[in-house]
Length: 38
Image 1 (cartoon, rainbow, N blue to C red):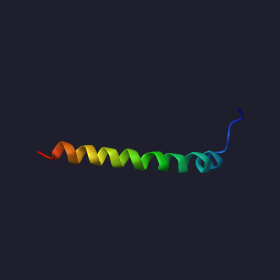
Image 2 (spheres, one colour):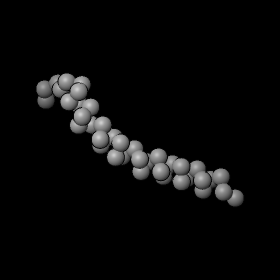
Image 3 (cartoon, rainbow, N blue to C red):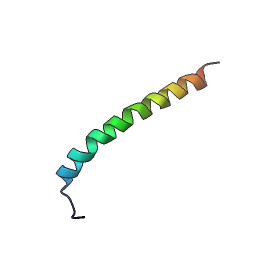
Image 4 (cartoon, rainbow, N blue to C red):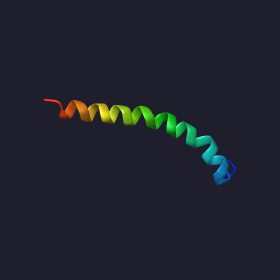
């Protein structure tokens, strides 16, 4: 694999990272709410 410029790498990876990050943050906040609930 040839080394890719940072701009190309960010364009390809950033949307995927955001798409994966949102469900993770949701599950984390959800688990925190469950933990805080009596």
